[in-house]
Length: 68
Image 1: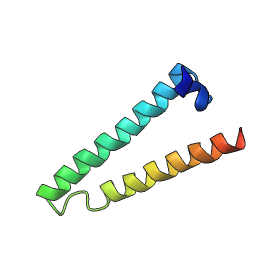
Image 2: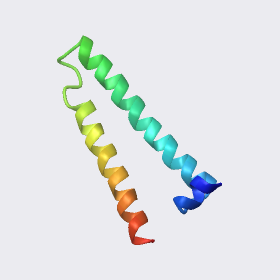
Image 3: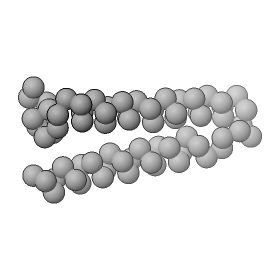
C-alpha cells in the first residue's frame, strides 16, 4: 500500500500506532467529559494527555525524518 510505503511501516506497525492514537483520543474524551460534569475531578488529565500525544506524534515524525 502506498500509504504504508510513504511512512516506511508494516501493516502491523501502522495499526499499532493508529490504535495508540485512538487510545489517547478516548482517554482525552472520557477525562474531558468527566471534568465537564465534575470540575473537581481530573483537572489536568485531558491536557496532560494531549501533551503526551503531541510528543508521541512529534517523536514519530522526528524518527521518520532521521530514517529517511
